[in-house]
Length: 285
Image (cartoon, rainbow, N blue to C red; front, side, top):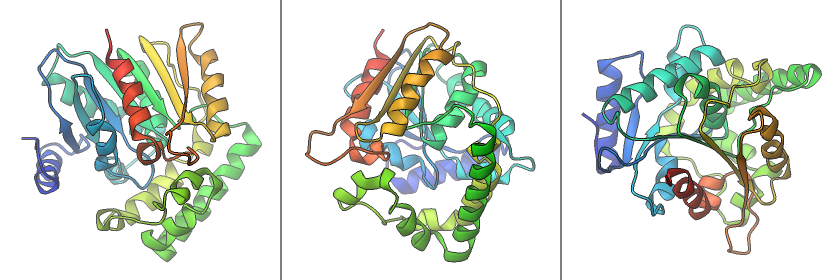
């Protein structure tokens, strides 16, 4: 049912998946491998889509299958909060895993997808958890309230201005300096424009300001965190995550793309080779 080649085939696969079972999120197969090779299941960031992981998947050396889940359809949930979103991600991962039950599970999440991956870890108990530029600690109460207000304003701006205009403004933030330096800021595929209403709802309902509990990362056999070398807030978050591991090892990597430009938040395009190396490490026995 799932496509192995080409974006049009991937879209057909996603449509088929959605029509077959609306309790699951659609996904794309970016790489295939033998049944006992590691199975990477990846979650993209806000305003993203599965193909955001293509640059990373193409640079991996380890043999592994690579499946990227689409998150915009979360907006179709009647009740949208982090527990319900994490449960839907869990069901989707389990559906993918049912096809390759012998494969070690590597769960990966970038930014917003990292929050979801962390929230689903207790239920999925992955062999490895890879968090990319992800902040998963709950915010202090006053900061949480302010973040809810900020995200509600962003959702209103997205509704009002549309995806293209919104993303140009979004990428002006210092956390995307690496995109700007590489001339990659502000470009949005037409497929993302179509998902504008979904992302506006997700911004409002799944704001980090509404996450009250720290995720249980203890059930991940291994945990790796990678953030941009110049993205100090997220480097600090990786260091703080060690406490959530309850003494179990957590590797923190500061990504340097080696091209003379800063590495900040958008590592899937700023430093895909570094993220691929981290996933290669996570796939190792």
